[in-house]
Amino acid sequence: MYPLNKSFLLAIIVIIIALVALGLYVYMISQTKPTQRILIVGTSPDFPPFEYIDEQGNIVGFDIDMMKELAKMMDYDDIEIVSIDFEGLIPALQQGQIDVIAAGMTITDERKQQVDFTIPYWEADQAILVIKGGDFQPESPDDLVGKVVGVQTGTTAESYLTDLVENQGYDITIKSYSSYVLAVTDLVNGRIDAVMVDLPVAKMFEKQYNVQISGIVETGEKYGLAVRKGNTELLNKLNDALTQLMQSDKWDQLVQKYFGQG
Ligand code: ARG
Image (cartoon, rainbow, N blue to C red; front, side):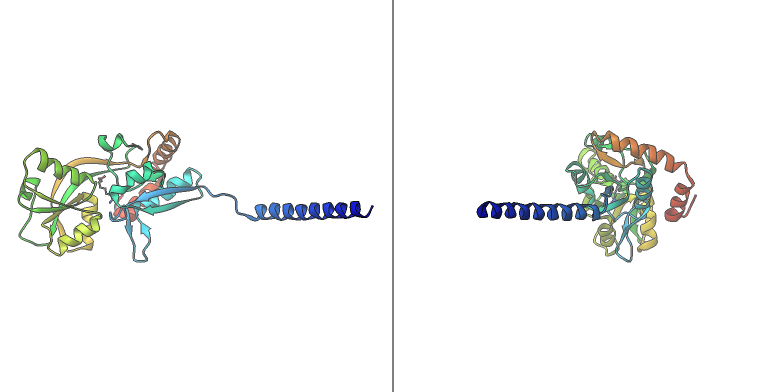
């Protein structure tokens, strides 16, 4: 009788402990926040006004505000911005570190083999930037022969110049930088002769640095957002949201905020 009683008591205790533990577990689960839907956006913040780092060290810009609006329209709770050198954006997307690239990225046939692009949201040509008021005022790529020209690694400016050098016999020295800000800094310090960069960005650099646009190359590029190849669900949602946003007043406000024109 006595030993039976003892194991009965033990069983009761075990059950009580188990129940308390279960209760605690259920309570803890109910206290945790509901899971947030976050859209992870990769960008290379050296490209004002599309993406740059402000005085407080935050990544801001047209592309960032645009992504916030799009995410809201697609029912995301928030976006997370991941800073990656431009040339690393497509690999990061392919490896699943980010969901979308928003980086003033030109839609090209070569890139289309690696990622899927949304509809275009901006158009741009290329500009040649030189030191302000200097003797060297190249108007066209022909004037760059014998000179050192800075670009950002992996950009359309880099491939444009590379094609001139490798396929068309131009003697131009291309200097590639991880960021456009570094290229412009080297230009200001006289370490290179010119920088080739997208025209809207060149216009911003003109305001911020002692540089000026000396020539324009009409490349007629179109910017798109990029998602992983085959991620049609996100691509369709982005295209729907983008179509809507571009027709709204919000879009005009964004353009006004970052470009100061309607
Ligand atoms: N539009 C050019 C390209 O697609 C340059 C983009 C550079 N973007 C940046 N965020 N740094 O190659």
